[in-house]
Length: 370
Image (cartoon, rainbow, N blue to C red; front, top):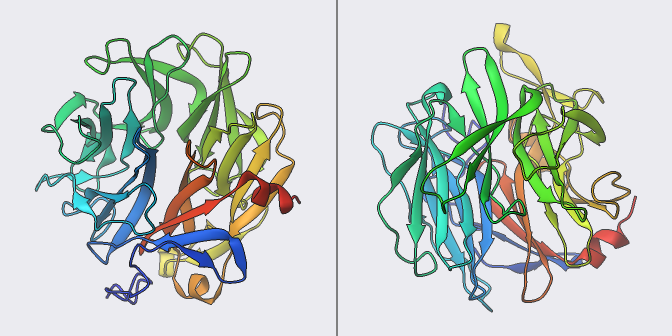
């Protein structure tokens, strides 16, 4: 099957030039489609604003998720610029698939890149790889294994849980299923301790944010494609409450949450689920199955530290291109707020063909309140 037949072509789409432009009909939105080195699969973006105002975006790109030739790549949006650079390769292990990168900058300015690395199409073999940069991501130290696993995966970025340590949300891929944990380093990434997230079987890719009271809120993807689940820690991530479903739907795709300067929490996710009957048929023959829609991609705001999410606005909705693209959609978002201008920067998988980067204001989200 060709890439075009899979819904991922054409190989060299002229739209994928990395230029930020106003969205036609909605000048409150600026958007860019990043250059994709390989036409096959682009997925799982991570954004980071550096101290100097440049923005980095990392994602995995290659023939297919899990393929040995699929690797992590990195692009840059210079401060004040409107064009993303071409993507540079950040991994190239010839025997392993490199996926799900996450970026972070420590108080001393060091930039970290974490990503799982596994034998082809076997996440149970994954270990966690780390690289560091001391010049804003222009050059990088050699990769090293930060956690042996096996089966350790990440998706969302680390944070200081309130005690000066570094907490990295993770999950374990095992023969009996997946389960969420957190990795915590008290020595700036030199070593890691692992802590369990209770009641998180088949709940993965936790996104964590600090609440005003100092507790941590974790929001999780559900493999059941029912609802986003939530868990809380009151001891800086060393223990967690049993994960429970929230009011928000989940389509078995990633979510990410961040705190805004206004105090609100901003969450980006797909407002769809199997529980709500929102699906399309994928596959053929005995492999034919229902898959929850990966549209719309929605921004939600909470003014009570994640207890309710009354403000929502769709960022990307299905169009003809979506319905022609097989099972792929708009998914795996990451979100951050720029310290320079307060804009929300959101990046996500665009039909698995490339990564789309969008900027909007908090006011834009609130104007679309449902």
